[in-house]
Image (cartoon, rainbow, N blue to C red):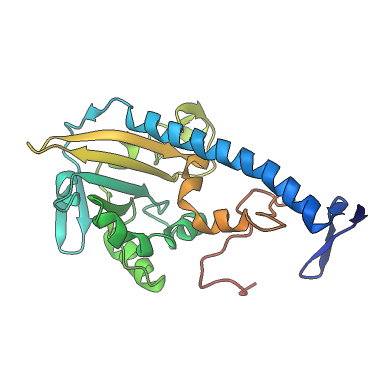
Length: 252
């Protein structure tokens, strides 16, 4: 068995990795089967976790939330669009922002292709931000997205689901995000929330997640995880420092 130092080039920067083992195909198959057992274990654990997620208790929604979208004002109940399940992605786009968050834009690039499949499984998915509708709609057109995007400006929705921090949170020193109190670097935060609508019209909050919990939405990341270099973010200031809006790559 021999080993070889692999040198990876990023632009003009050369990054050296720890010496990587180079083996025969037979030895590779042995190592691959060992990893496969771990992958199968992870898949079973993920299925168990998903089942526990579905067993969470629900909270009945008594608040009257209104959103501004194409065609005017709609309620939370309207967003289900005739289906019993609703997913809302909380997109970081504050009232005075000129553009949507680059990381949220990276996530949103994954949405359009999934919509038809979700709809045929009794799921409606929409995106909500606190910026005025006209501004988010302009940005949506710029990004060439087709998903439904609504403004929650003037509503308590973002605050109730802990993705906006203003008013009583001076300088964002202590805000409640991802089920704990701490600091956050912006007035807006990302997240995703799930809802269920009963036959009698009652709506329930069934699930929300934030932070690294949103990793499951990022198909591009999971493709990178299959490669030799993986996400290759260890030496960056923060994990998504490399991300650009998809019309801005190469603009530096």
